Length: 481
Image (tube, rainbow, N blue to C red; front, side, top):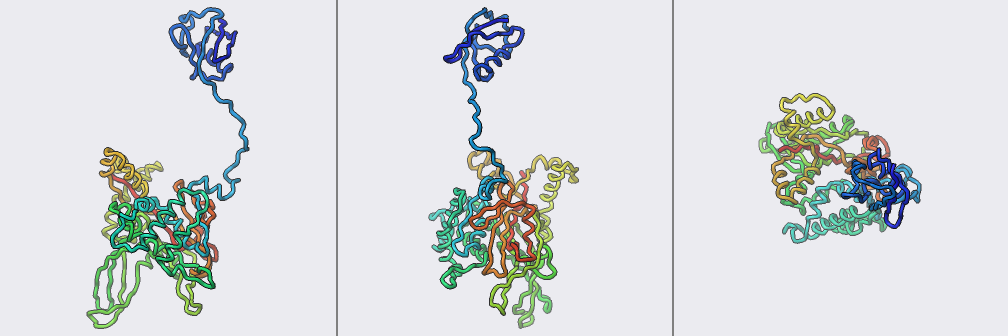
């Protein structure tokens, strides 16, 4: 046993015992108890340099009463918290939402819930936000009218304000420009602005942005984000005449009848319709059957539940309250054309193999083991983020250029716009949006309220409660070399 003194800063510890049968680390622990300096921060000067944790005491030649010098910074003294811990479930709803990610609500400016819910749903699309951020006056299309330009700028600015704010935002500028571009949203009754149809607001805004955001980067174009190419066969039963038609739409319709209980059934009804037109063969008007199939898929699939119809007796849009279930995961393979189905076969097999591997199941594909190594599961925004990151370096850019995003025909629910009430031009609209962390937020105008995922599919109708009017699904894609 050896006794030494230790000087640290302005303090001197005169009698510190060293047990030379123990390694120097034990000595350092003694000094930690005296000074608060952790062993890893201690620098103790001895013969030959600094004292190491595993040094041989006998080789150091220390003498009884020798003074050692130590340098190092002590740990801060842990203070008791000024406020007691607060659990998430005990916070007000607004603060709960803030802890879950995006939180800013939109003030209702007078029957503007139709507009607020539309904006909140579209604001959840990161590629759309990126395309808007890149939009400039000088970069606009030459054939774009001034009001469309102003509405695009107002949308860009409102999205930016929502991203920066944690408190509710007043969308005054956006509302003014929207009314100027589309006067139907400026209708008044008794001096007050009237409630409007959220689907009309959604459709008009998407149309305007499709005209202004004609990005050279196809991944950011409105056609790539929301566009659905339909190929349709039009046949006259009387004359046997047939023709093919290709059209671009930005949403699918879920038609509701007494036979429809599920979204998939309603979509199939929506892809079939009858139309009357002049038949060249018959020389008169005839009924044609139009059957459509999806030929190209979007990154975000928008589906409108056709819940409203014009009721002559009351001279207003009446509402179909029938319950129509919809899933969190939607597979549209049987709605696709034969050509598209063939293209989806390999990506779907790769996706199945990946999911089987994830859950410890054996893959059936012969080359699935090889493909699992080369293919990474992704989604539309991951693909975009990787392409954005690639622009920062030539090396990563070359790698990303060799990758290809492929659709699988499977979509995940990311937003629901609901309506509560009996008429499209009255009642109340609310947005239910899935955050990047997987949590759901209900945006009831300025009030963001956390919700459970299992409650989202309960908004299927059957009463006077909130029921789905528009659903937005996000493509589940894979990225291949």
